[in-house]
Length: 91
Image 1 (cartoon, rainbow, N blue to C red):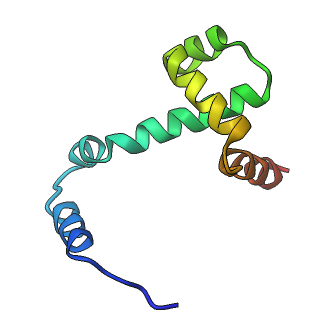
Image 2: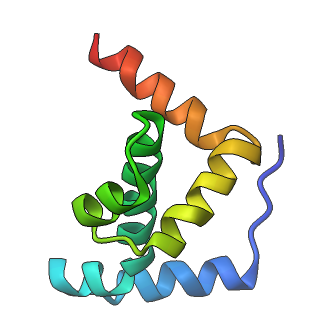
């Protein structure tokens, strides 16, 4: 499979290479923190916890919990696959 690189990807990598500290990486990759929170929300949804419990445990808004629930229930199965594989890896 041929990889296709774009000017946008080059610019992204150049921007990453300018980062000088762990804190700058956290600041730049802030969306990763959001994704990790959403994965934790999905995990707690799978455990049948309430929106309020999940919101308190993760700091996510109930609106975010609702969006993750919609993806978890009606989406393409990404959350379910990832959580299943994580569980299998823990055994």
